[in-house]
Image 1: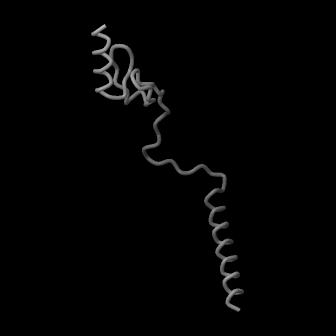
Image 2: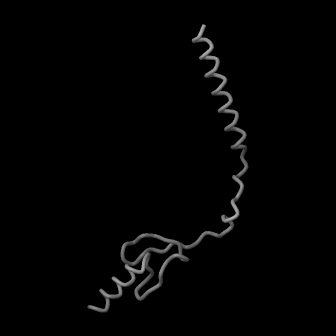
Image 3: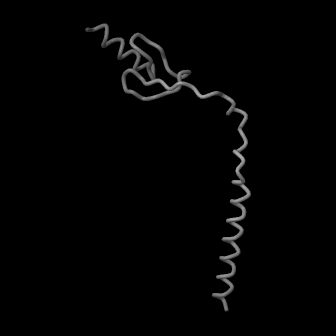
Length: 82
């Protein structure tokens, strides 16, 4: 008796879960958030470590772009010492 009730409850919960998922994925793309209107940016690699970062966040320097001020300084010091 109890097993039958648990089985019916599980079936009902699975059906509710499946139906709620179908409504969410009805072929429509998710609504864009207010900050998502930016166009994609070019990704640049740091000249020292190779980490890729958006063009707006890259630090320009002699010999390329860098992910941090420390990498820019270390690169420029190594180039001036040669």
